[in-house]
Image (cartoon, rainbow, N blue to C red; front, side, top):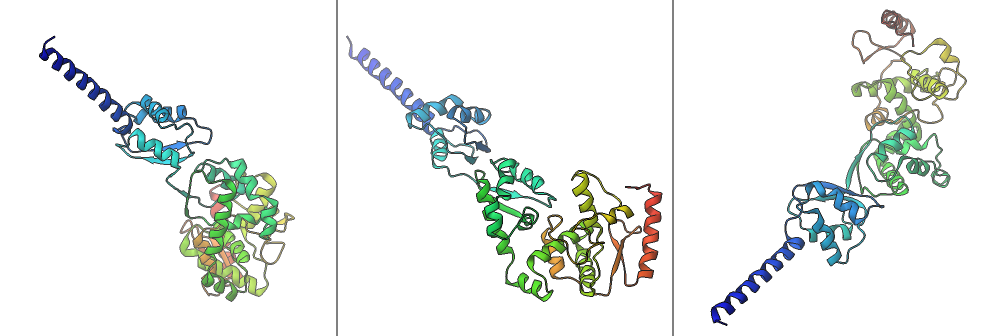
Length: 342
């Protein structure tokens, strides 16, 4: 056997060995993820589920399972993971093993009911709406914090928050409650005290202001008007509370575009035509502009307001009943022409 042949065999073995080694290295440390993406791993997901989820942005999805077996990795930690282009299977498995997930920027706007709020949150976290709703209504939590199923909506201040996608319903609720207490800082509490209102009463009034006008610039004016009525001992006569009463009777999806005279006779503690003072709790979830609108209410002599027909979405304000009656007649005439009967 010639030396040339021996050298050729050795070279071939080295080459094949090198190729095998390189291929093995590439499976573990080579580029596996082909584009930036977000991977959601549920608590019930297996490695096969993960493999299927990365199929569309994996160079070779089958190598993921091979590398997982080599690394003795069998169960991924649930979470929301940000995967970067160029990540290797080794990087991916280390990430899923560590559970080092990327937080969700969770947000919610004005939700009228706990049910709607739970549905909105469930769209952004792994937990479901029923579990969230059960947590919000937990009797021990409500009792401990002097809340009820009606008033607990007040702790949810519409804003953006950071949460891990796997945050449990109770942990979500507890963190939101901490944020609520942080929101009520010394400055806001002092302003509430100056108005002779508790923070709960501020939020209740803010929920009415929220429903009364969508225009942020009007909210301090509307708040000032209702405060004038409270100080005079007048009933608030706030149409949003009547709409709340109607929806309590008819269902939350019932559409009310016009308050009828008969509605004013609804027997409810939330009827501010029949009862003086603020209703027992908030009627909707006010946003920060409505709350601060109350805390920074404009001082004026307005006692009446009516939706404007000249500037849709805004209100006309009046100091006297005679002036208000003229404004109201104009508005009702416009409503009739629009054929808005309910």
